[in-house]
Amino acid sequence: MNLLEPRAEPSRTLQWAAPPIAIGLMLVAGSVLFLLLGRDPVQAFRVFFIQPLESGYGWSELLLKAGPLVLIAEGLAIGFRARIYNIGAEGQLIFGAICAGGVAIHAAGHETAWTLPLMVVAGAAGGMFWGAIPALLKTRFNAEETLTTLMLTYVANYFLSWLVHGVWRDPAGMNFPQSVMFGDGALFPVLTEGNRLNASIFIPLASVLVFQLLVKRSFLAYRLEVGGQAPLAARYAGFPAGATVWVSLCLSGLTAGLAGVGEVAGPIGQLNLNLSPGYGYAAIIVAYLGRLHPLGIALSGLLMALLYLGGEAAQMTLQLPAAITGLFQGMLLFFLLGADAFIDNRLRLPRRTA
Image 1 (tube, helix red, strand yellow):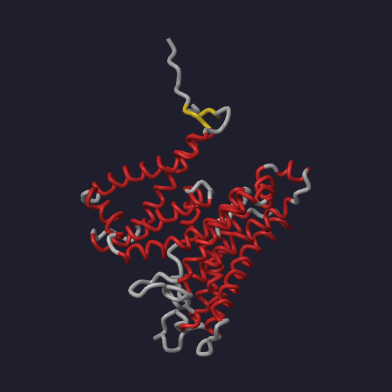
Image 2: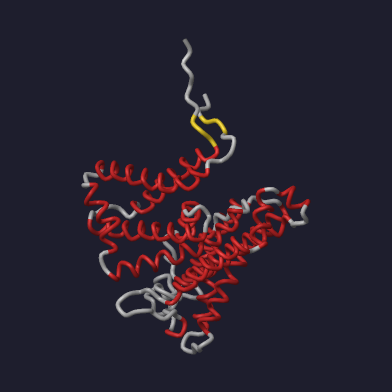
């Protein structure tokens, strides 16, 4: 028996209430999980959500991790609004990092004032190129972008592995799969001493403002949304359907590539196999938790960054496995999808028969 029936129109209240409901359910399920693991939920939540922010260093780490999440999610949200589902931002981040890292490696020892700007341009172009491949496959062969973007992530990963195991491996790196450390001229300057927060944080801050203007004031955003949600109406109005695919995937690839630059020219300072703890995948949750709204994405990005920090603190303080972060992210997505189901549907209770 189907217990859900369609609403006459989507519930606006539930559309905005779904994220807090999902967060609340995540906390309830987390409490049960901690009890099953033999941990005091109150102490565990203090370690998870409060302990990481008890120092200035913790706040700087929060911003450092939120930056790439927000930046990627802003780009993804444009495509999601147009119903173009890019699931491969992780691969676009990696390829953007490869392109930026290539500039830094070839400039090693000879960095100039142009090295870092060239890395930013190369990373953005690399991410855009990696997003353009599924756009071409979608418009030319009608290939499903959810599959092609995801599969290209594995290609980017293997390409990075080949580079750092081979032609770009640091000869003095004791055979570890990593490139040489980048010079100071190829790194974003650290903002304050004693932490890792660097000038790359201004890129996601700017992206929030740019995408806010794009969504609220731009005819392009309107065309993209119409093209994705009502293709026939868009075609009648003269909006080319292919342009929606190209702009959505290239734009989201560009932001993911910039996030890759922020990592290799920031806290990592080189190419290695651990460029990202899954930012490209987590940004999908960030985009939907923020309701595809630029400011909402900024807030949900901070929450997701706190989950990363809390997971690290739980590993050290509570001796919990590293998978605890992914588990909380998965619960958050699960409950968000469950709550979202009631935006367009209502619960239909079975009637009792006499």
